[in-house]
Length: 111
Picture 1 (tube, rainbow, N blue to C red):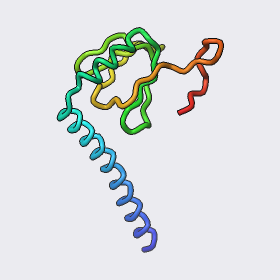
Picture 2 (cartoon, one colour; picture 1 turned 45 degrees about the vertical axis):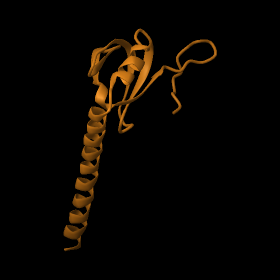
Picture 3 (cartoon, rainbow, N blue to C red; picture 1 turned 90 degrees about the vertical axis):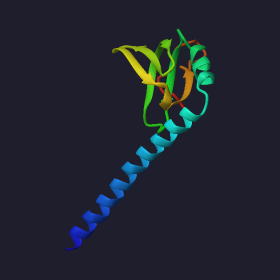
Picture 4 (spheres, rainbow, N blue to C red; picture 1 turned 30 degrees about the vertical axis):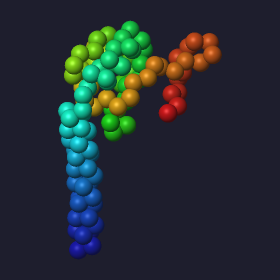
């Protein structure tokens, strides 16, 4: 009986956390659609040809690679595995890959 109650509580917590991420993503997309995106597009175009780190809204997804193209809704990134497209609605941060004093890429990136 106690195990069923614990399982039920765990299940409810898991569903709540999962829904919270979905609601956050939906709010971010609605906010971006209300606002003008040309500013973010123009800022992203400054990084074309540079090796960058791109963070998404939930901070658990980070993309690394060289930005090749920026369109109205996506960023095209080239990395070791090939090409990758990232939806611009979910991007919250773009920065150049940090380098040390000698100009080499850092192996551990502090945030």
